[in-house]
Length: 331
Image (cartoon, rainbow, N blue to C red; front, side, top):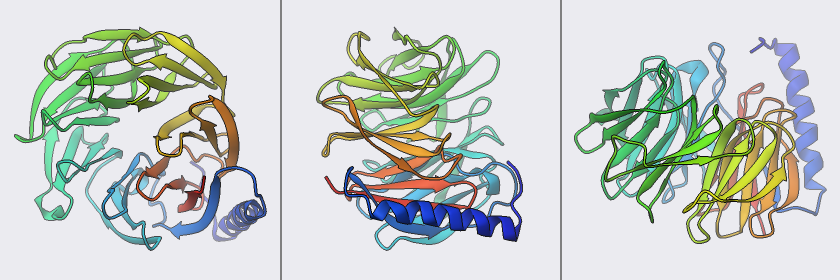
């Protein structure tokens, strides 16, 4: 990431502000901009990574990889609170609301950190495999799946209650996003190459139970509609692929504005949000019609968003100006 001088940052801020303010005049599309939240400046290269929201309080947790920390945001009042330090290479973030826990994966130290939402002092670290990234949680069995790197590439399964590594499973290639399907009691993990989605059952966490081939290159973001039993897979090939969560059958493919990263489903509004770093937009799809209804500018390089399902808010984490842009889904 290039360094931005004070004068250069001022130009970037002005351009970003003008772009965002121009959106207020737009009447079409569900996402309405609601301003910015200033976050700490980057100490080194790395920007932001994954983020999640505590549904009851609206508190937002975002991995600030450049600062080896986890930034906390008051989402109700749109203000930065503080940062939790000493999380080297913080990457994945998960709020396990059922257990009232917060989890981070930390690529720079090959650990996951687990702490109660209301007690950061009780943070405990579990050593896992190389370059941990995406995380997903099974609340019934208290299991955490961690996508990893390494050679061979593996995923780790952690017993959250015991704060201990339970299993390590070799997978066919580099992992990306991971989610949990409560109906099948199965973790789904995107594999970039060969392009596929791997399924691991909670009842047999030491083996791969299922593989779904993805017809586009580079599966990245992943979301699940539990009711309609559909998997939404955002691919590097600038495609959104929709598959059956139960059989892997490909049901539809749609174009994206660029290479995507994270993907979130708003089941109440029937909207799907895809973060596109280049050119820097959030693509919004009608998840029922499978049609793009809006593409909202953010900032170039903005790959990471968070979704508050209770308040229908989207947070986009802007790497050049180290801020969060806030949007409200009003439809």
